[in-house]
Length: 168
Ligand code: FES
Image 1 (tube, rainbow, N blue to C red):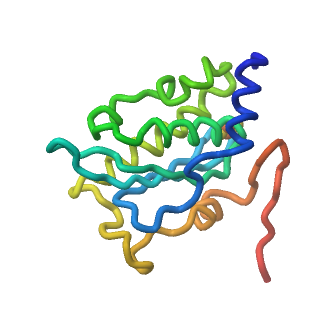
Image 2: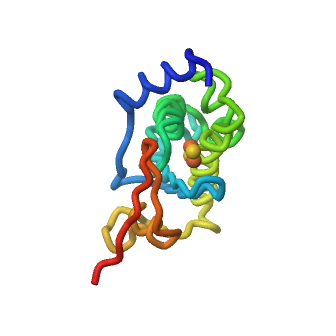
């Protein structure tokens, strides 16, 4: 990885933006990477501007590597004010653009962010909405930790491999 990209990632994860669950979100998308077992969830809140539906704010949670966190942090900032159509058209390269081109082994980290965004935008389609109104706790989807447990027991984070133990 180039020194420049590495420095930008370090800067981004030193002060990640929009990290955390959004309780009043209109849409949520969760993806796991088959390449590394990491997971990322993105929440979106919409508003209307000039007669168009736009993203008011976005947030994320991640059991992912530093690159995924850095891309998600920058992407959630970038998404604010975008129309749904504009957001749907954004590729992982667009979302990770502030970091510069990612090295080949980190491309899937940006793709995970794109995947969570696209899933959230799909979930906003009333025909496909898996959770409906997420404003009440009973209607909210499971936590990212729940999803992670369903996916598998091993979690890699920051170079550490953490194995979650089953409770007796
Ligand atoms: Fe898996 Fe980055 S998201 S290594």
